[in-house]
Image 1 (cartoon, one colour):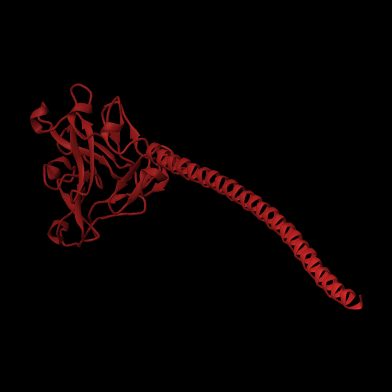
Image 2 (cartoon, one colour):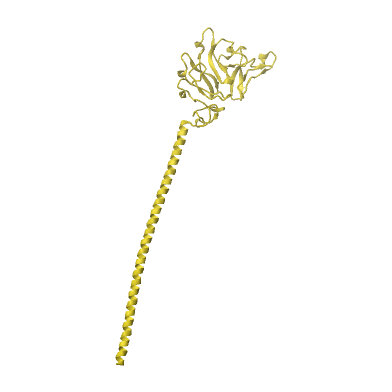
Length: 286
């Protein structure tokens, strides 16, 4: 009996051990199952977080794209405005102001004179003027270029812009760089009658003049005269004296002499041009 009990006790212990092991295994299995659920839940949460992050990233990207698009649109708009401003000449300088190009001027036109600079005005060529030609600005006075109606003394580049009966001619030429051309009453002596001659009548300080038919000996002392034409005949003194301008060019001015021999024992003093106000002075005997 005791042996059986002993054996049963051993079996019981073995059974209890197996049952304990089985319970332990089941318990472990249950715990493992819970851990798997937790892992799945965690993975789902992570996936959800990743999806949220992706959504946020896409939203951020979309917002960034919208901002970039807005910035690009603003830049393009600004560029278009600048281009339009340049094309329309929407500068800030009024007529008569110094300038280097038309974009600086309210009018969009800058008339440039070599060595003398530019002035804002209504035009810089005849094509800018619908009813006539373009009168150049006076460098000694901030008046700006203006559009004329082709009248006598109005600036021109060709006969086409001058009124009927008038001719476009050059009245002052400095090395071909600075010229004054206007609508005048004649082009050559053949256009004049009664012994008159066709000569430029110029007021240098006003930067204006015309070719006109005048009687010989009409132009007074210091008046501009044509060195290459009938200047001597046009001057009352009979002498169109040369005036040197900074050793760059010469213009004529009615004067008293060309050399000392013209002064009857005196000395011939050359004339000059005042670059501040454009006043022209002929030669004198001293």
